Image (cartoon, rainbow, N blue to C red; front, side, top):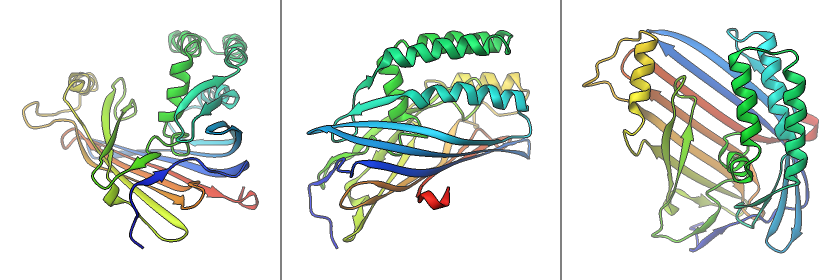
Length: 289
């Protein structure tokens, strides 16, 4: 069946809970040696229609498994305790999943204070102190918290920024910032989706998108990190580049519910440093938990 334009992708979900399994696989290859880090999460999404064109989202993770041999058990526990803060975040969006506000932000800020106080009794040092200070400042800003949820690759896959109205001629694009391509670096990726990349039948719709690096603005951060870690590169020929950036979202055609979302990224800076990242989100039944 050919798409009928304009295509309107907006939230129209039945009220209730949906269960998802999220996996994150990261492969870092340095001088030919590959290290793998894996994170698995099960979580549920509670959605409520508050009034016309306003929805309430609550996403709660109830199972976390982080497999990384280079991270100690205490570090994994530390990361899990911090991540639990977001279990209290409830966002209010419009019918396209665009942020309106955070519900009961003061309650969330109170939990941050209590979590930081509790963790500070067990975890000390500069890295822990920097994390505590960041958390206190971050959760004071409603906009930061909301944008983190909408762009974060864990949850943005459900409340997705590509919801909207598409005409045959339109190209929709967004810029997303990543911090996990290389330690101590940030890089912006421009994601782009075009109407002809969408096809559907009576039940399912597939939305596909790609991405590229829009500028060389932060490249010196990568070169500095390569020097610090003594990884050889050629400044004239080795530049940060995306060898692959492909995503696809499988939607229920009627409800626009996200059934499955996968994003594969391949990044390199010369022959001595490569990174592959695979995000995968899939709806599962209660029995599959």
